Image (cartoon, rainbow, N blue to C red; front, side):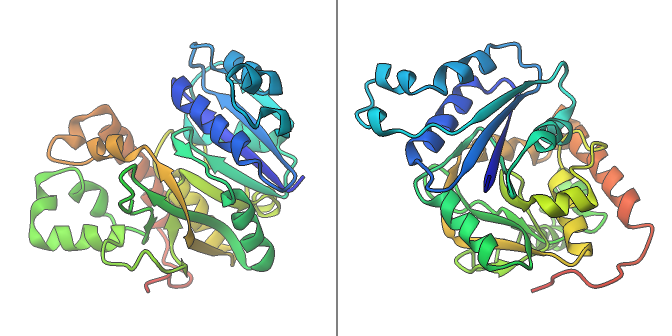
Length: 289
């Protein structure tokens, strides 16, 4: 098995349906499997997956290419509770058979060739531990999905009035790599976890997602551990996918962001991250290009 695609769902039945359609209709030309984990949505999502993962579904949907579709093996996992992004994805990783793990949000639109091109890059670049494609908004503008490691102040600046001050905005923009040329494939500090291709052998060696994070910072933490173990984190600019999350992610920032539930979860995850890593000095300097 070359690639195991893990999709974690939580009350995103409609997006999950479109994501699965995109994968199946793109007909990846490699050996792959799909693993859908549901974080106790109670909305019939996994029943829908079972219905979709049959050629008969696409025939009934009047898709002309249905007779030629090759359906991959798949698994569904029902979590009894919503224990967050890390725990949910770890359930999928534990049963995955692929050489590489693709962590995929249900709000990602896969198009033909994406999975194969990411797989080929990993095969040709053994020093790469985690890669991610360029993420685009539905209007095809860039999402800032490759980032530098933050200092203590970045999470606070992003959610308070202080972030509007020139010195704070400069620091946040540097963290978000706003001025970086996103047309370049390059090594970075960490990548947004909406779509990642990860070496399973390294996960088995250094551990999966840290389940102390319910949401946010788990992708940064995983990239940090890969980097500390000598693997490169690569932003793959010549592979593009649409990510529909942008319209919601903006709600995490702003003047009142710190008072929202998402804001509080974000700050708590930030505290856990900094307590984990910043009690000691960097053994080597992270990427600063």
